[in-house]
Amino acid sequence: MGLWRKRRNGPRPNLPKRPAASAPRSVGRGRLRRRRIGSMLLWALAAGLCGWGLFAAYREAKPLVADWFEVREVTVSGISHVTRQEVLERLAVPPHATVLSVDPEALATRLRAHPWVKASTVVRRFPHTLAVAITERRPTAILRSPLTTLLLDEEASVLSVLPNQEESRLPVLVGLDPNRLVQGDASARQAAQAGIKLAGLLREAFEDQAVVDVSRPDQVVAYVQRFRFQFGPVSFEEQWRRYRQVEPALRASIGRAGQETTGACAARGSSAGGCPEVDLRYHAKVIVRERG
Picture 1: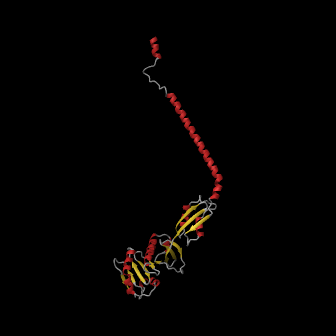
Picture 2 (picture 1 turned 180 degrees about the vertical axis):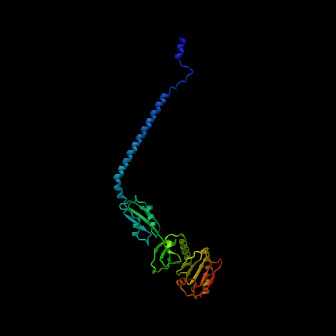
């Protein structure tokens, strides 16, 4: 009996022993978790108090900031055709706006919607000024039609409508529907740009006003100083280079035989008498025809 009792009271070799440190480790982990939660709550409380304090400070200081940085002056540079009043109306800066509250890029975008404005910038000048710099479009040509007369820049953008009786020494484009250009038709814009480019080449040799007919983009016709020029679809520069090479001899041979003005030659077209015709449509050739 004594031996049996001794065996029952002792540890049984066939059962695993429980780790003695398991209970204290669980207690330590719980304490660490509670500490972390407490720290997070304290930080959240501190952040909330700081945010509330900043908001209260901003609410109290807002009237002072508005007074310190209120827009009181707008300077404008680079304008000639555009008026200062038009600039201010396009900006539409709200009353009591500050240099901090306005968006300079949005204001510049409003200005670029003006037909005469090619580029614009708006810069803050602390404490009370907005500085506006404008690059205007440059009048380069006139588009004339029975319907209306338009003033164009070098990119064939429409700047304004001109009275028919207004005189100008700018090159004149004909043969193009102005409504197509106003409506943004791509082919009409390309034809106008080609005419403007050709007028720039003609200005190298002639001081008189040129009239460029762009009704057929593949066969552009130009009238200037009694001459009628025909251009083909290839590069204007290459065709004009050919003419410039023979220009001295051509002028000497023609002399003062033709007395028609540029406008008269353009009005009468290919049948214009007294208007020497220079045909540059054929490769490596300059063909001169004397029209009687």
